[in-house]
Amino acid sequence: MNPIKFMRSAKVAAIIVTWNKLYHVCLLLEDITKLDLQYIELDTYVIDNASSDGTQAYLEQHYSSLVKVLQTGSNLGGSGGFSYGLEVVSKLEYDYIWLLDDDVRLEPLALSALVTTLQNYQEVGLVGSQIRKLQEPNTIQEVGSFINSAKAHLKTNYSNYSNISTEEILKGRPYISVDVCAAASLLVRQETVQQIGVFEDYFLHFDDVEWCLRAKQGGWIIAANPASIVWHHSPDFKCRPWVNYYDERNLCYCWQKHRPELVLKRVVVSLPRLVYYAITGRYFLTEVSLAGFQDFLAGVRGKIPRTPNYIEYSLNEIINQSAKVFVQSSIYQDNLQSQVLTKMEVEQKLTLWCPPKELAKRLLLWLFACFWKPIDIAIITYQKPEIYALNLARQVYYFTGNGYVPVSINLLALAQAVTQTIRQMWQIYWQVRFANSSYHICRT
Image 1: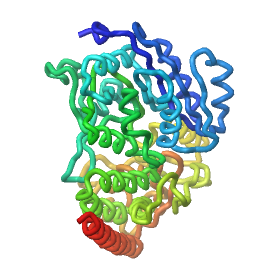
Image 2: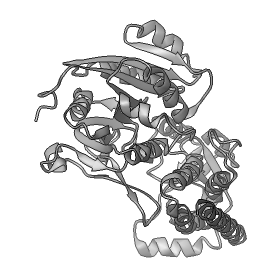
Image 3: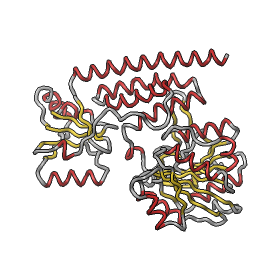
Image 4: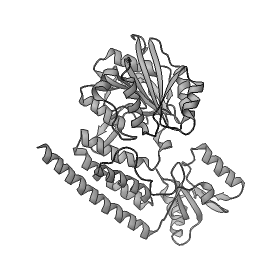
């Protein structure tokens, strides 16, 4: 079905929140100029969280006819930026408000398909797009999400499906009813915003989850329309360790408000994961998550109040003389890092080491490495590390996407990290359990 077939005229405000992503914002604005806007009057607002890359000045000089820049004056995060924009445009005469991440790319019918859904189905309060991975354009990142009670988390819909049509996803339905849609591309009714208000002060992550659950609690259906297609940077490519802080803290706040029974479960199901981080030398990642739980218990909201407890180094700092280096192949998806690595190899600052392909030789080498290390430096990804390499190098660095974190891989350090993780999670467990008990007593 052509998504603009039954459209009536509609006035829409697009809100884009940004912080130091001028290049991505400009690409998005170019996509907006290519949208099919038949019957749609679109005004675009860029909420600038005090960028230091000249975002406001550049947009006002080169895109003054397309956008209005609203300056917040400080970095309020995604939740603060969207709230700022919503408070402004919800007082104006718009039918719908379109929330967009600053690094998405748009298919020309991305907006019209969303508008059609809200026009034709009055029970729908918010409708989201089919989000595909920008690095793998035919692979779906999500078409909305559902609450996964077993893991006290979210289950993304159609995640990692490839080359599947809109008709196959819809299966004759006009839209898909879900629990949550990401604010990467989310269209909301003006009256829905007036009813449920703006985002919670989460800074970033899970603010859109809480908002959707609040709307659902208010009687609205949350829908996803796969006919609206946008592309977004995959979390596999853009994740950073400190994001885990916001994930754990804000998810707990969200469950506390909408599904209180899932808060304690979230702590329980997180323990094996955090222990796994610790036993593989990633205690710095465990610490970030623990801080999220602890700040939830302390009632801390907004931007993380402390600097993450790890130091990131550059390639030039960790490889300052000729060395035999192993690099996990999945790390260098970033062009700049690849170029630096290639330059070092040309300048003979390093010799790349490749593990043997035969399993028997790999096992023999791993056992041999317990007594003598065949590699000077191993550089592996902090997200999905190649565990085999941990025992092979004299020095191990985890690549975070921004820099390289040195870790100590020895039995004593790993044992201490695991013990500390279990002890701290045990304390958090009992604090959450006590807080839940007090909450239920107060309610009764």
